Figure 1: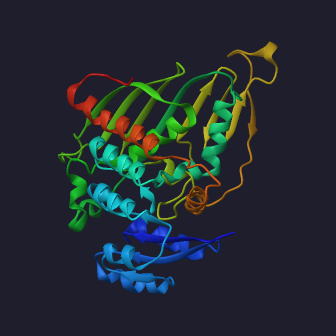
Figure 2 (figure 1 turned 45 degrees about the vertical axis):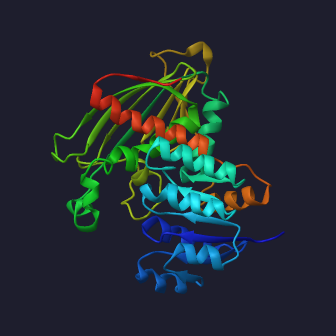
Length: 348
């Protein structure tokens, strides 16, 4: 089978991770990488690929099938549209764009140039999340009643300093940076969100941007949900700390997701199902049984790139395309709006 030829634009923290991932994969050719900061030249060459300071030079000189794009959010549209015009398929890092209008224009650019637009909500490629989706959508805990998501991880002072000072400003808070992952997971596992109400606070750090959020959700199937997120309280509860996916974060056992059904409750990432084994003895006066669900670990970033290659070759469908990713962005932005106006937001 033909090897897909891929390039990379942007070699920051997530871009470097993509570069390292592609450099290890034998079923593709990692042709070249670009970043405006020349300090990344050494990294690119160390990974066995060409380096360009200008992505325009790279896409004009190199023969490639697709690009992984990991640039700042406000550049997603101009960079993505330029590459689409060259007939290059796109794997755009999340979020799809900085705002809904830009997302619409990027989707249109991909459609007009007949290229695929896939978006890097990489957690959809985690086998644990896939199995959680199968359990919930497959009725293995009965009819879904509700979901609880917890996220309490403390961001140290230097997270907001120097070149990262933008994180203390509107648009740089945990809603857009962290919560968007949780929204996408809920949508992928359960289905669309139809209504939300958010309480948003910056009382602890007093930054212009939020540090704590509490959200109530209604889902399309009638279930309800709640999310609590803060980046200002000592804690080790959250996907990054509990899922074992990224060793940058201190890893500790914990439960960050609860999915409640009429016939059982499943927790994540422990993948433990609580239920009544004898339906004739169901009720709070009887003990619960518990079963573990075995899931084999695989690197979601590798699986994401492999899916992108399959999409380019026409052998696979994208786990999340531009239209789907736009819905995740819409819900995420609505959380901020709800907090500002003190009113629930409804979705068609």
